[in-house]
Length: 247
Image (cartoon, rainbow, N blue to C red; front, side):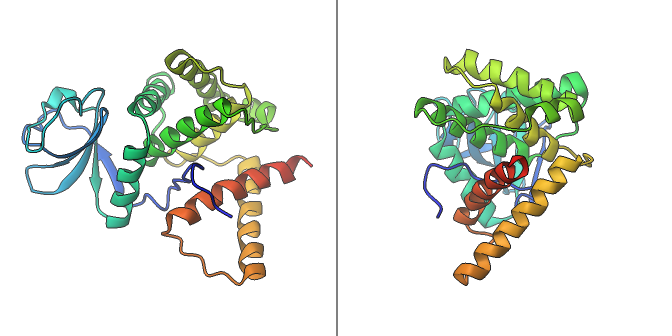
């Protein structure tokens, strides 16, 4: 029912213990583990584990080495062991270029529209972009049937989606279908602080919850909402909900 290689669904609830900040005076950060060129696991001045994001921040770094504050673009403070494990897994399994692309797209949204972004978007968008490129290379295209509705109801998020597919194409050389504009826009709708969900989003959420309930009853399941596979199954349920809405 849930297969490897599918994107993780990073919900605002599953990442509720995830906070991020940037502090220009972080001079006591030391490397614990290099996750990829854009992410390192480190300890701060209080001995607490954090994950640092920055272009090239992990390049040729050694355990115990101090991080120059100018390299740090984002600091994620980990308050939950399960969350830490999932994030490290994503970082190890995902090329650093996808973290850089996601960061560039999010910064565009912040600079142009002053969007207040929830920290989990850095992860969910990275995972989505990585999986999107893989799908295109594998010849798999998932149609998005509500692109026009997205453009009409959420023009700012739609513009970010347009910018996003251009950046992905420029950085990877892979031609991204226009259907992805709506998918990425939807990430930004969900990834903003206090964003008023449009009617379409609310309907999709209701259908998705019903799908989960039906599967649970039919197969006599007990969901482990902290499980990695459960998060991925939600992604499939949302895609099914999208198809139901336009049928």
